[in-house]
Image (cartoon, rainbow, N blue to C red):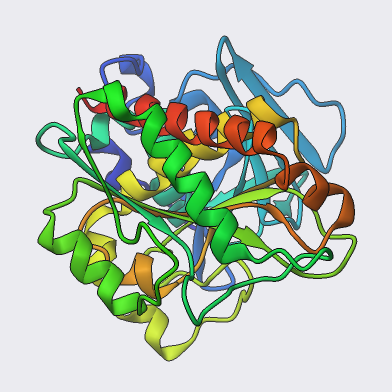
Length: 324
């Protein structure tokens, strides 16, 4: 197959990349998409050689940087957190390949966040307690509702962010009904620099863990649905902050998993309205499953919600620090 020099990366050179590596990444077209060898990606980011002896898996690590992937899967490990890709990893000629779009849209913002810093200091943070009023959200096995737990969690996050120097606003402070469009309107009115929507999950009784969502890039599918829909090719307001979205999601997800030791369901992509219509970097956190009896029992304790809140705040502050 004909190979083309991947010029995109030539114009994304970081000071930490060795000069000999500049512009050496090459892409090859498989099934209509351009892919790059995982080994070349690891070389570009100076992650060392493959440490895995399995043909279907590759793993690279240098100091705090880590990158591992498995053939035919969309989830990878990136700096000790799970991330979901736009396209599955492919195995060709005994080597693993990752799509060029995923390197640019998923890996680069995490491995070189300072190259994607948004202009200006984070001065205003809007926290969004999911649901409320007539919209109760998920209901746990004990009958407790998501709307009351998200409000409690959000107020705890607010307290942990109080000394950050930023102005903290909540889209709701009581059990009131608030439309999705109103949440985004509130964010715009406050001229937010960050928007974080907090939720609890529900599915089968066996589902468990924490996941953090950000908006898919233009032309990329959602994590839950690999098929592209017509609207997936349309640019949304939230896409203006694509690199910041994934970096903010990474910071919060990594902090939550470290603090709770919950199952890492990863940084995922979805076109939720509050993410799609956001005017600032935005994420939506699902902080555990109320439909799982064991996980719900932890969520219902104030001590665990305090742990969640502290971890979310620390993730936000890690993002803020990286932008300054």
